[in-house]
Image (cartoon, rainbow, N blue to C red):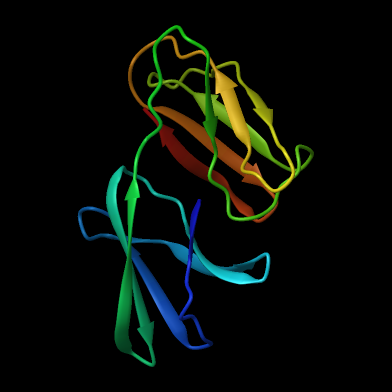
Length: 146
């Protein structure tokens, strides 16, 4: 999931995230290192918008451009996995599949205070999907990697 800061957040604030087609994306507001953040998992690339409402009144927007990581076929690559909480190598699990649904050999590394990194060698063009579970991340979160 991606996280974006919400400086104007107070109890009773509602945040609605929308994808490029205007569809609502499930999101949560969580305290990360003492600061409120909107966490969501984009299902597509392109401009997303977090609409902020307080007591039912629209008080602002946060625009986020979601870009798929670019990879080169047959060359090793490393991609940061967006997750909403601090995770350790012991509590995150990632399954990577290629565009045909085949499992892909991959390695996940985690450094203190940083998003986990998945390393792999793409064998064909298309969207690779990292399915993340562990910690507060719901089982089955899928991140597209183009």
